[in-house]
Image 1 (tube, rainbow, N blue to C red):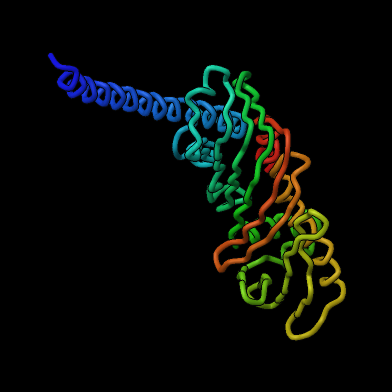
Image 2: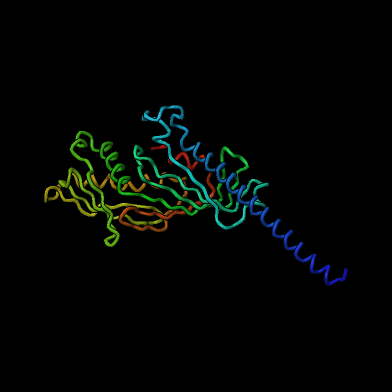
Length: 269
Protein backbone atom coordinates (compact mmCIF):
# COMPACT_ATOMS: atom_id res chain seq x y z
CA UNK A 1 0.00 0.00 0.00
CA UNK A 2 1.42 3.36 -0.98
CA UNK A 3 2.17 6.00 1.63
CA UNK A 4 -0.57 8.20 0.13
CA UNK A 5 -3.17 5.46 0.65
CA UNK A 6 -1.95 4.83 4.20
CA UNK A 7 -2.21 8.55 4.95
CA UNK A 8 -5.72 8.57 3.53
CA UNK A 9 -6.74 5.80 5.94
CA UNK A 10 -4.88 7.02 9.03
CA UNK A 11 -6.21 10.58 9.02
CA UNK A 12 -9.92 9.59 9.31
CA UNK A 13 -9.04 7.11 12.08
CA UNK A 14 -7.19 9.82 13.99
CA UNK A 15 -10.12 12.20 13.61
CA UNK A 16 -12.56 9.52 14.78
CA UNK A 17 -10.32 8.77 17.77
CA UNK A 18 -10.03 12.44 18.72
CA UNK A 19 -13.78 12.93 18.32
CA UNK A 20 -14.45 9.90 20.53
CA UNK A 21 -12.06 11.17 23.20
CA UNK A 22 -13.71 14.61 23.08
CA UNK A 23 -17.18 13.09 23.44
CA UNK A 24 -16.05 10.98 26.39
CA UNK A 25 -14.42 13.96 28.12
CA UNK A 26 -17.53 16.09 27.61
CA UNK A 27 -19.66 13.29 29.04
CA UNK A 28 -17.42 12.96 32.09
CA UNK A 29 -17.39 16.76 32.52
CA UNK A 30 -21.19 16.93 32.44
CA UNK A 31 -21.46 14.04 34.89
CA UNK A 32 -18.93 15.70 37.22
CA UNK A 33 -20.84 18.99 37.09
CA UNK A 34 -24.12 17.23 37.90
CA UNK A 35 -22.66 15.14 40.70
CA UNK A 36 -20.51 17.82 42.36
CA UNK A 37 -23.17 20.50 41.91
CA UNK A 38 -25.77 18.28 43.57
CA UNK A 39 -23.42 17.36 46.41
CA UNK A 40 -22.69 21.01 47.21
CA UNK A 41 -26.35 22.02 46.89
CA UNK A 42 -27.39 19.19 49.24
CA UNK A 43 -24.77 20.14 51.80
CA UNK A 44 -25.64 23.85 51.79
CA UNK A 45 -29.35 22.94 51.90
CA UNK A 46 -28.79 20.56 54.81
CA UNK A 47 -27.08 23.32 56.80
CA UNK A 48 -29.71 25.95 56.00
CA UNK A 49 -32.73 23.71 56.59
CA UNK A 50 -31.41 21.71 59.53
CA UNK A 51 -33.89 23.31 61.94
CA UNK A 52 -37.05 22.28 60.08
CA UNK A 53 -38.72 18.90 60.59
CA UNK A 54 -38.03 16.69 57.59
CA UNK A 55 -40.47 13.95 58.59
CA UNK A 56 -43.46 16.23 59.12
CA UNK A 57 -46.49 15.86 56.90
CA UNK A 58 -47.18 18.26 54.00
CA UNK A 59 -49.89 20.06 56.00
CA UNK A 60 -47.69 20.52 59.06
CA UNK A 61 -46.67 24.21 59.37
CA UNK A 62 -43.19 23.03 60.43
CA UNK A 63 -42.73 20.77 57.42
CA UNK A 64 -39.57 21.29 55.36
CA UNK A 65 -41.80 21.14 52.29
CA UNK A 66 -43.45 24.35 53.51
CA UNK A 67 -40.65 26.26 55.19
CA UNK A 68 -37.56 24.77 53.56
CA UNK A 69 -35.33 27.05 51.50
CA UNK A 70 -34.35 25.63 48.08
CA UNK A 71 -30.68 25.61 47.03
CA UNK A 72 -29.47 25.30 43.42
CA UNK A 73 -26.02 25.32 41.84
CA UNK A 74 -24.54 25.79 38.40
CA UNK A 75 -21.12 26.25 36.82
CA UNK A 76 -19.67 28.69 34.31
CA UNK A 77 -17.92 27.60 31.12
CA UNK A 78 -14.68 26.93 33.04
CA UNK A 79 -14.07 23.13 33.04
CA UNK A 80 -14.08 21.45 36.45
CA UNK A 81 -13.09 17.91 35.39
CA UNK A 82 -9.43 18.16 36.32
CA UNK A 83 -10.17 19.95 39.60
CA UNK A 84 -12.51 17.29 40.96
CA UNK A 85 -9.82 14.78 42.08
CA UNK A 86 -8.39 17.45 44.41
CA UNK A 87 -11.92 18.23 45.63
CA UNK A 88 -11.44 21.84 44.64
CA UNK A 89 -13.32 23.96 42.13
CA UNK A 90 -12.38 27.16 40.31
CA UNK A 91 -15.94 28.45 40.40
CA UNK A 92 -19.52 27.62 41.31
CA UNK A 93 -22.72 29.67 41.42
CA UNK A 94 -25.05 28.97 44.34
CA UNK A 95 -28.62 30.29 44.56
CA UNK A 96 -30.43 30.18 47.90
CA UNK A 97 -34.16 30.78 47.75
CA UNK A 98 -36.59 32.08 46.96
CA UNK A 99 -37.66 31.88 50.58
CA UNK A 100 -41.18 30.41 50.96
CA UNK A 101 -44.29 32.44 51.81
CA UNK A 102 -44.30 31.25 55.40
CA UNK A 103 -40.80 32.68 55.92
CA UNK A 104 -40.11 36.17 57.24
CA UNK A 105 -37.89 36.77 54.18
CA UNK A 106 -40.59 35.54 51.79
CA UNK A 107 -39.57 35.92 48.16
CA UNK A 108 -35.96 36.85 48.94
CA UNK A 109 -33.15 35.09 47.07
CA UNK A 110 -29.38 35.08 47.55
CA UNK A 111 -27.18 34.36 44.55
CA UNK A 112 -23.42 34.21 44.81
CA UNK A 113 -20.70 33.39 42.33
CA UNK A 114 -17.94 31.77 44.38
CA UNK A 115 -14.30 31.24 43.46
CA UNK A 116 -11.65 28.88 44.85
CA UNK A 117 -14.05 26.37 46.35
CA UNK A 118 -12.61 23.65 48.59
CA UNK A 119 -15.01 20.82 49.44
CA UNK A 120 -12.46 18.46 51.02
CA UNK A 121 -14.68 18.64 54.10
CA UNK A 122 -18.13 18.09 52.62
CA UNK A 123 -19.73 19.10 55.92
CA UNK A 124 -18.12 22.55 55.84
CA UNK A 125 -17.31 23.73 52.32
CA UNK A 126 -14.82 26.60 52.05
CA UNK A 127 -15.27 29.47 49.61
CA UNK A 128 -12.25 31.66 48.81
CA UNK A 129 -14.28 34.64 47.60
CA UNK A 130 -17.68 35.49 46.18
CA UNK A 131 -19.59 38.20 44.38
CA UNK A 132 -23.16 37.99 45.62
CA UNK A 133 -26.57 39.51 45.03
CA UNK A 134 -29.46 39.92 47.46
CA UNK A 135 -32.79 39.96 45.63
CA UNK A 136 -35.37 41.59 47.91
CA UNK A 137 -39.06 41.80 46.89
CA UNK A 138 -41.71 44.13 48.38
CA UNK A 139 -43.34 41.33 50.40
CA UNK A 140 -40.09 40.69 52.28
CA UNK A 141 -39.79 44.39 53.20
CA UNK A 142 -43.38 44.31 54.44
CA UNK A 143 -42.79 41.19 56.54
CA UNK A 144 -39.53 42.49 57.98
CA UNK A 145 -40.96 45.88 58.89
CA UNK A 146 -44.05 44.35 60.51
CA UNK A 147 -41.79 42.07 62.55
CA UNK A 148 -39.68 45.03 63.68
CA UNK A 149 -42.77 47.07 64.58
CA UNK A 150 -44.13 44.19 66.60
CA UNK A 151 -40.82 43.89 68.44
CA UNK A 152 -40.14 47.58 69.07
CA UNK A 153 -43.49 49.38 69.25
CA UNK A 154 -44.93 47.60 72.28
CA UNK A 155 -48.71 48.12 72.77
CA UNK A 156 -48.73 50.50 69.80
CA UNK A 157 -47.79 47.65 67.44
CA UNK A 158 -51.36 46.37 67.12
CA UNK A 159 -52.33 49.75 65.66
CA UNK A 160 -49.48 49.82 63.10
CA UNK A 161 -49.49 47.30 60.28
CA UNK A 162 -47.74 47.68 56.93
CA UNK A 163 -50.39 47.17 54.27
CA UNK A 164 -48.53 48.11 51.05
CA UNK A 165 -44.94 48.36 49.81
CA UNK A 166 -44.04 49.76 46.39
CA UNK A 167 -40.65 50.22 44.73
CA UNK A 168 -40.06 53.25 42.49
CA UNK A 169 -36.98 52.81 40.23
CA UNK A 170 -36.98 56.35 38.80
CA UNK A 171 -37.29 58.06 42.19
CA UNK A 172 -34.94 55.44 43.71
CA UNK A 173 -37.09 55.06 46.76
CA UNK A 174 -39.59 52.80 48.50
CA UNK A 175 -43.03 53.97 49.55
CA UNK A 176 -44.84 52.28 52.39
CA UNK A 177 -48.39 52.47 53.62
CA UNK A 178 -49.50 51.44 57.10
CA UNK A 179 -53.08 50.82 58.19
CA UNK A 180 -54.42 50.98 54.61
CA UNK A 181 -52.89 54.38 53.92
CA UNK A 182 -53.47 56.10 57.26
CA UNK A 183 -49.69 56.31 57.63
CA UNK A 184 -47.49 56.89 54.58
CA UNK A 185 -43.70 56.73 54.50
CA UNK A 186 -40.96 57.27 51.96
CA UNK A 187 -37.78 55.25 52.48
CA UNK A 188 -34.55 55.75 50.52
CA UNK A 189 -32.28 52.67 50.23
CA UNK A 190 -28.60 53.39 49.61
CA UNK A 191 -25.04 52.10 49.87
CA UNK A 192 -22.83 53.93 52.39
CA UNK A 193 -19.33 52.92 53.44
CA UNK A 194 -19.81 49.36 52.25
CA UNK A 195 -23.16 48.95 54.00
CA UNK A 196 -26.70 48.60 52.69
CA UNK A 197 -28.79 51.23 54.49
CA UNK A 198 -32.33 52.57 54.48
CA UNK A 199 -33.35 56.04 55.59
CA UNK A 200 -36.81 57.36 56.38
CA UNK A 201 -37.16 60.69 54.58
CA UNK A 202 -40.74 61.62 55.41
CA UNK A 203 -43.80 60.34 57.23
CA UNK A 204 -47.39 61.49 56.82
CA UNK A 205 -50.04 60.42 59.28
CA UNK A 206 -53.63 61.22 58.34
CA UNK A 207 -52.36 64.30 56.54
CA UNK A 208 -50.18 65.61 59.37
CA UNK A 209 -46.77 64.92 60.93
CA UNK A 210 -46.64 62.98 64.22
CA UNK A 211 -43.15 63.23 65.80
CA UNK A 212 -43.54 60.24 68.14
CA UNK A 213 -44.49 57.77 65.41
CA UNK A 214 -42.02 59.33 62.99
CA UNK A 215 -39.15 58.90 65.47
CA UNK A 216 -40.20 55.34 66.20
CA UNK A 217 -40.23 54.43 62.53
CA UNK A 218 -36.94 56.26 61.96
CA UNK A 219 -35.32 54.03 64.59
CA UNK A 220 -36.81 50.85 63.07
CA UNK A 221 -36.08 51.40 59.37
CA UNK A 222 -32.23 51.25 59.59
CA UNK A 223 -32.47 47.84 61.27
CA UNK A 224 -34.32 46.56 58.24
CA UNK A 225 -31.36 46.94 55.85
CA UNK A 226 -28.86 45.66 58.40
CA UNK A 227 -30.74 42.40 58.82
CA UNK A 228 -30.53 41.68 55.11
CA UNK A 229 -26.74 41.96 55.25
CA UNK A 230 -26.81 39.58 58.22
CA UNK A 231 -28.08 36.86 55.89
CA UNK A 232 -24.53 36.71 54.53
CA UNK A 233 -21.39 35.71 56.45
CA UNK A 234 -19.46 38.39 58.32
CA UNK A 235 -17.23 40.55 56.17
CA UNK A 236 -19.37 40.98 53.07
CA UNK A 237 -19.28 44.53 51.69
CA UNK A 238 -22.13 46.19 49.78
CA UNK A 239 -21.06 47.83 46.52
CA UNK A 240 -24.08 48.59 44.38
CA UNK A 241 -27.87 48.93 44.60
CA UNK A 242 -30.46 48.59 41.86
CA UNK A 243 -34.16 49.25 42.42
CA UNK A 244 -36.70 47.65 40.10
CA UNK A 245 -40.49 47.62 40.32
CA UNK A 246 -40.57 44.08 41.69
CA UNK A 247 -37.29 43.85 43.63
CA UNK A 248 -34.21 45.55 45.02
CA UNK A 249 -30.88 44.02 44.07
CA UNK A 250 -27.99 44.61 46.47
CA UNK A 251 -24.61 43.61 45.04
CA UNK A 252 -21.99 42.62 47.60
CA UNK A 253 -18.69 40.77 47.81
CA UNK A 254 -16.84 38.82 50.47
CA UNK A 255 -13.89 36.54 51.14
CA UNK A 256 -13.06 33.33 52.97
CA UNK A 257 -16.29 31.93 54.38
CA UNK A 258 -17.78 28.47 54.81
CA UNK A 259 -21.10 26.77 54.10
CA UNK A 260 -21.80 26.63 57.83
CA UNK A 261 -21.26 30.39 58.17
CA UNK A 262 -23.50 30.96 55.16
CA UNK A 263 -26.24 28.85 56.72
CA UNK A 264 -26.09 30.65 60.08
CA UNK A 265 -27.33 33.88 58.52
CA UNK A 266 -30.36 32.34 56.82
CA UNK A 267 -31.34 30.23 59.85
CA UNK A 268 -31.62 33.20 62.21
CA UNK A 269 -35.04 34.02 60.78
